[in-house]
Image (tube, rainbow, N blue to C red; front, side, top):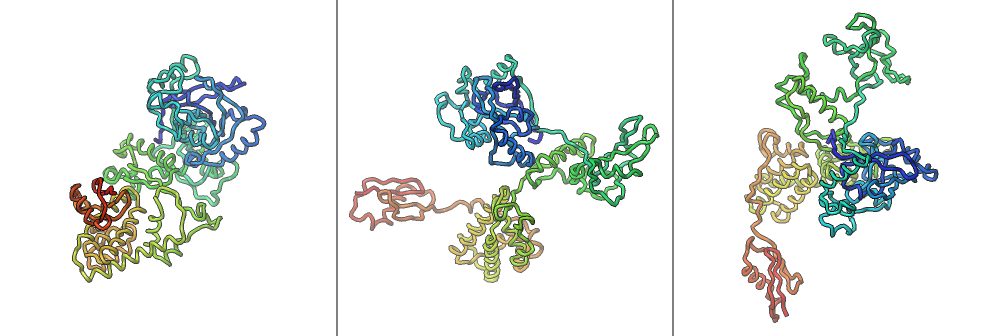
Length: 583
């Protein structure tokens, strides 16, 4: 995904009343008949030429807004925005006029910076078309009969071609090859491969950064600093702020810049640009493994023991910056024998942002929550637990000032349940035992899939079950399991309860609780009793009960309602419903 190799075709679209052409890259030339408009990146070189006089103000304003966003923000945005240029392109396979728009969801450095838009089969194009009222056409379907059906959402692009002229009925993969050949024969397209991979500008005009180990010699050209002279150290300076001249602050330190060419011995000058911050952060994880090694980056045996990283938690912007560069570094280090693996991270998880008062927290806006205040009032465990409970960790969530109150009450209930019941040493009951093993299963499953909020909700429901069905009594085995389950999120309370209940060692060394699958199987089911389709009662019956026994139990339970009536039909939906049709 980082490299983003895509195989497809480049296609030239003629522009109405112009000799210019727009070249697009598409992985699906078989959907050309479904293109109903085009979109250029705001930075595309043709935008100025294509913009009509009456659209100039709107286009210029949109470009200014779009260029203020990063590529990551543009790729992540779900809201589709854009501006119409006032010009039209011609679809090369159908001759249809296609309005040309600009939008920030198209990036200038991927493909050609221009796309043909097939809203019937691309989610982003569909959203854009819906926003601006542009046509949506199905060109891939499971059968020819589906060709005329309205498109309610962007559909998968696998099936047969429809609404595609002479290619109707052709399998999409065969159509992809056929249309690519047709484009090549006409001289308006060709098969090609595109990448999301971008060049990495490796130099910075700043003081802070690793010096680039190059010496510029008037006679030898750029010369690498010999290995024995590495690393090149930054000089001590009083001012390290950018100079405003476009040069690095290092350029003004002549006694550091002036040096000797290692090849010819004549005067040379050090490279004054420094490496970007990513240069150092692309291998720090290896140094953490062996931080005091003076002979090597890290001991290979230690690297094999600890790497690769099982889970990397970070923002979405890391996927196309730090992690990409770190991957390059590790592959290079493997090539030269420093490490024996070539993938540094096994799994990436992107956390969401917590908003407050409808915006990202910012001191300038004054919408910042001070965690110290919350810790003083509720404790660190309650704050940590609420942050995990507030919503799915991968999505943006709004902070609720009162939400932590509920979590604090939950922890108080856990404390009381354990302290009130431990000394009583209540015997184990089937109800509580089943509820506990169900809880262990649910929490384990949810934590493994990062659904912490629903795992906490299961614990809250468990306390309600103990209160309603267990008379607020629980045995020691169940209480110990509950302490272990809350420990990762409320470590202080869990550890204190663990010690108070007479356990030795830390709760974190006690092992995660294990559920018994047999206890997850319900022995009874709730069956609804209906008369002429109206609910009259609900009965707990043994799981797997036969139809005859279910009818008999239902007739007995509904004897008063059935008195004086003739049962003309009995309907049984296994383990769910008994319905008597009477007159």
